[in-house]
Length: 107
Image (cartoon, rainbow, N blue to C red; front, top):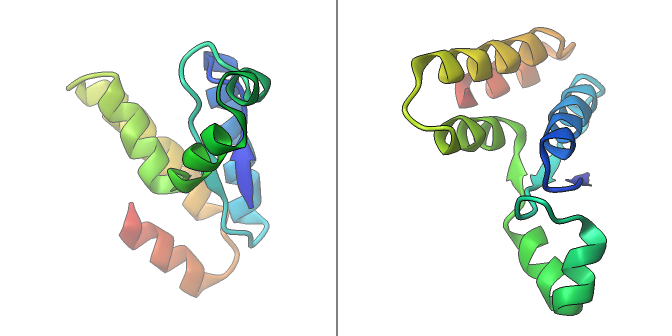
């Protein structure tokens, strides 16, 4: 499952929320982060299928995506703690114990 939302703050929140739901539902979501202020239509209009393809190739799993979001906000312990709390909340909701352990190790 690939999640592709707008590249603004609301789009990032929707991607995190949707990935959380997908993981809890047993899916393996990948998230595409669009450039700030762009939506999928902008990417297609500016660069065509190649541009979307390149972004899809850069999609990330939930934990690496959260880690990168925290890193983009600088070296702030509070931001990292929030990202970790978000990840742990999601992990706690994964019903399959083996999968939960795997995602926990990734975090």
